[in-house]
Length: 381
Image (tube, rainbow, N blue to C red; front, side, top):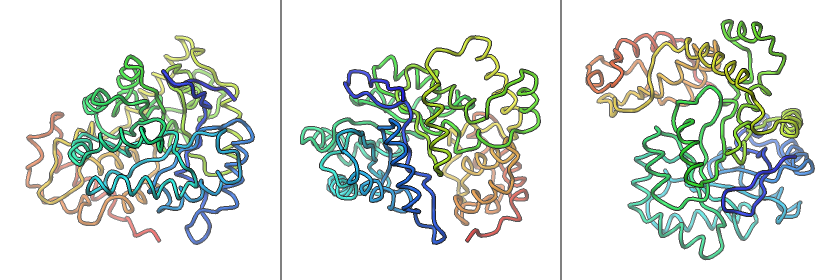
């Protein structure tokens, strides 16, 4: 297993990190403990030393499961990352309470890498108002947390503002060959590197979408260049080629995936992709992006909608459905993640959003198309 150091830290982190968000489930919808522990132990025995979880993963089951795993190994040989659920914090005391409970879940007296979970500009401002800076400083001073960071879901300007607002040890954001200009993107990667902030890459396979069946126009690029790699290896090696990225978090859901990812982690290196190969990645990216029907950047300027329609989120799921040619999968995402009161069919075409859109998208017209597209969605048990 290859290892990289965080900037200014002595920790040598495995380039493959184990993300505990997509652990296998049993028939009851709970974590399949036997399978999950087998996966964690295989990773540990093969050099993976960075394990990432969060309060909310698997409806609260992920942290206790990882805690059970920690009780079975040598704790000082691994690095544990978990996250403060910012959306549940109502006051300063909540922060301390969550941290204490998380250490209990994990059966540990300290957390190596502690993140503010899923920050955006709005949640960062709210967390600051509630006293998060004092909380972070105190937690680190008391030794409960060794290194501080944040995970991120917003635009690059918000990322820059948050990154430079505090002395973070590391940050975690979406990083894959497709989303180079989305959210923090490559601009965020460069800024973090210039600032000496460690980088943990999440969603290198874009939630598994870059690992599946390739749309026809993308497959044509594969054939043109005689690419013989699996889509998984093609995607992962792009991230591992980025020397400034310390850890790639892979959300593995089977032992076979763990074995595959460990194998790739052992052979993929930084700074090995030549200019010709990187041009192929750009070509593949262009073919994917050609498939996007609504050129929404998810800036969220269209919000709030008077009818509470979740415009950017709806566009995001719809765009992915068309881009990856996976309607059934994205119908399920639409039904599960967009509340009924915020679905596309709640739009009354009032037009309040149209003048706010910097890309001049005819939002009511597009939302109407999407409502029709997902009209056959059914509740998923």
